[in-house]
Every structure is written in C-alpha cells, then in structure tokens.
Amino acid sequence: MIIYNSLLAKTFLNRKKRHYFMIFGWCFTRFKYLEVWEDMELRIHARQYTECFFLALFPALVLSVWLLWWWMLVAFMNYHLLYWLERWFGHHSSFDWEALEHCGDTLYLRKRKSYAWMRWYGRKSLPPSEWEDD
Image (cartoon, rainbow, N blue to C red; front, side):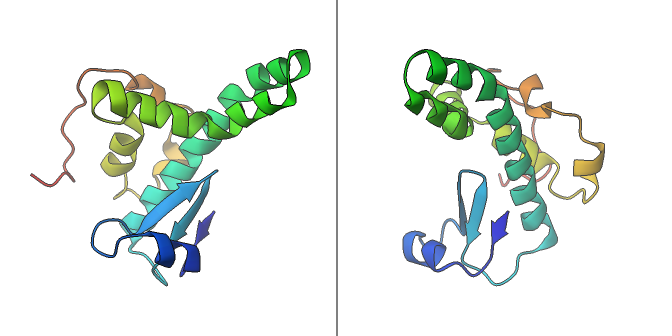
C-alpha cells in the first residue's frame, strides 16, 4: 500500500535525497502523486515484502509456539533483515536491482514470477541496469 502526501514522510525524509520509505510493507511518500515508474518501483518493493513475509511465516510461527511469541516479529521484519544483510555483505541489493530494472514496465507485476528476487540474492555482482545513473 502506498500512502501519498504523508505527514510522517514529510517529517522524517530529507528533501533532496529520498522521497519515500517503507515500514512493514506500507510505503510512505511525501508527494501527492508519483511518476508511473516511481509508483511501479514502490509496488515491486511491496510485492517483495509480501513474499519475504510469507517466506518467514511458518518458521516464525513454529518458533513462537515453541519458544516465545515475539519470534513472530521475525516474519514482519524479514524483508528488512534480508535487505540490510545483503547490503552489508554484498554492498548492493537484489531487491533494489529488481525494482530499478523493471520499474519502466507497467505490466511487470502481472508477468513476474514469484520470488524473482531470489535468483539474484547473495550474488557478488548484479547485471548493469539501463536505469542506473553513472
């Protein structure tokens, strides 16, 4: 879900660098509307978050029943954990690469295979994107 013209985003974001952030699959942006490619990029990130959530749901449920209930928070934080873990070790992100590579294709979410980001996760280098600024 994308929240446009968010007071939260206006408060916490730097005006020059970033214009959105995501918490638990909800994207907050400080603009009233976005360009088509920006909107598509946020929707791809939201789909990735949903896939990461379902990927960790069963193990988190088992751990929460077996040990403590707060293990369920791992399911909600899985996307962010995987994202920052890859950024820390690989200095890039397959999540960002997929969103940037396919943000110009408005039908991408219809033809996208589930867990498409896993193909590139953990690689030492990613293919160059036509959208990257050099």
